[in-house]
Length: 141
Image 1 (cartoon, one colour):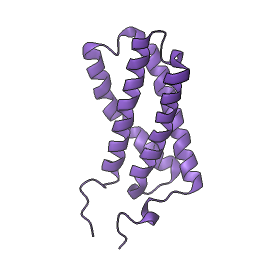
Image 2 (cartoon, rainbow, N blue to C red):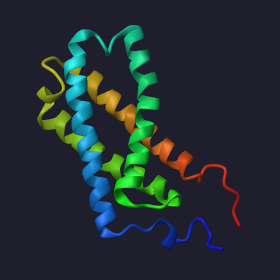
Image 3 (cartoon, rainbow, N blue to C red):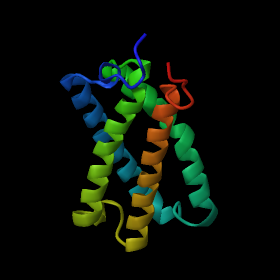
Image 4 (tube, rainbow, N blue to C red):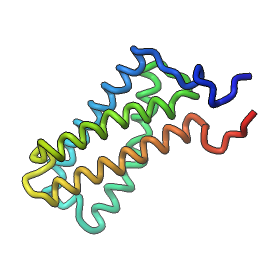
């Protein structure tokens, strides 16, 4: 039986990696556009922020399964797949905040609100990837 830390268990083909990176970029863009339009409605303020962050958790679950289906990765690879897709999204978030902040909104509070929601979503995606791949709490063989 292969050990969970074996490289073959976590390795991705170039095609899988490209699909995962692309889907991470697509999700980031969709989230950025959605947050840009919801920002002026007050989604980043007070109780609405709590609701937004709470909604990101179940809203991310289908995306994790989409990553698995679209890239053809095994369940044991979901953690690395979610991490790669999230890395793509985080790189784009950093570029957007530094050079294209208007993508997130016209004022700095909207930019920060959208960017931090994306950071939260990235953390959620990575955590869910590990939970779904059952790498959290797995006993070493």
